[in-house]
Image (cartoon, rainbow, N blue to C red):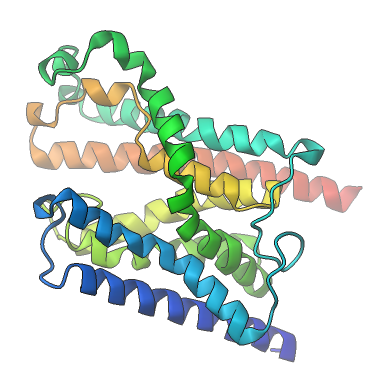
Length: 297
């Protein structure tokens, strides 16, 4: 390993050490009793979620320690700059719409796996106004776009620092796999209190941590793609925030009480991984095609 690679590895390890150390310390400080997520009051949940900011804080601290500078855009930058030239605006639009597409697909697959989940009257029973159901994705997109400042805390770290560093060391496709697993493991303290998947499933919490790692690999491909193509972490932050807002019409017609918990879990996990995995595969195909064209040009 040459000196430059050793320096790249050292920077990456500093970033990961700071990110995991600060984040996990915060998750413990904000919830020292390890109270389950659904038992936490909303204000405490928001307090715990401030941990999303630490990948960005670790990014800034790492650059200060390694003296890399704080350029906003360009090679080796923080990727915080925004430009709409060269049709880069397309990736901001995709960031708003893609979560709706793969979330709806994921829910459709879940219903196919477990037809009992679907109940056309479930929305009415939960008090949702039928006239407002088509507006659910729009509400999620608007809410997500506004909430992207919170998601920036993660994306400025993962896509703004970790992924470029991993790609330099391992190449794109290994980096996507390794980076997704790292990101999934970072969620472990939250998964252990039921934030991501609840607590009522076989192998809790280890099964949930494993599923989270696989999911983070899949969605990490999509987030890295929009970051690389736009040259900015902002599309990833927007996509992340819209994703967290759950933009799905089908979701209001799904009633988990209609089937057994195990079947519902398999359907939901299967739909989530197949839906995001299918889009991740499409992204990789696009990447390979453009890479091949670049070599042949």
